[in-house]
Amino acid sequence: MEKIQVAILMGSDSDLPVIEKAAEILDRFGIRFFMTVASAHRTPERVKEIALRAEHEGWQVIIAAAGMAAHLAGFLAAHTIVPVIGVPMDSSALHGLDALLSTVQMPGGVPVATMGLGAAGAKNAGLLAVQILATADDSLKEKLRQYRKEQRESVEKKAREIESKMEEKRSHTVK
Ligand code: RP5
Image (cartoon, rainbow, N blue to C red; front, side):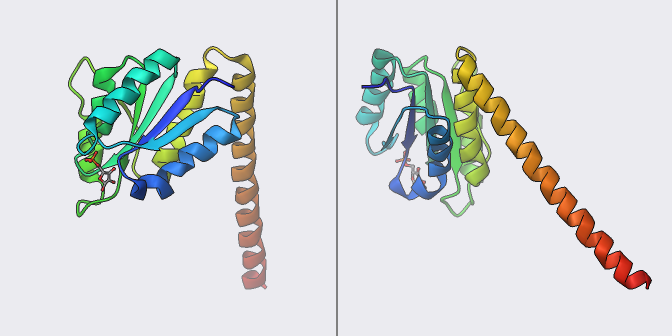
């Protein structure tokens, strides 16, 4: 069986619709990952076990998504030297600002790489994990370059479409 490279943990299954954007990226790059729910407050022992398993099994990156007090990423980071990427979730009356601040404001000595809120943050967590893995994998580097190329081409295509639409509009009004 292929070795797990990345783990995606979420504080609650309600985080799944957002954090699955990270999973989509890992799938796209052919990264083997493990995904589960573990709560820093409601199942702290389980989180600790997963952090220890990460080192034991040689996982290379952990992505941790949580809302509200959002201690999941920090709690994991406290129990392992595997790099942790935190993704704050918008799941409270404060619309994620609470989770963003508590994920990003780690005390010196225990880093958590914090992504933005929402689907973009989840997608970037997947991409950052791939970029970390790519530092020691030339074929992944090539796939990332291709990804950026496709992204660039897609933006350029949209730019051309908007420019020609505007041009067409202008030619009608000038007449
Ligand atoms: C939920 O509470 C969240 O979106 C979330 O991830 C979670 C945090 O759970 P604890 O780790 O605080 O138990 O509503």
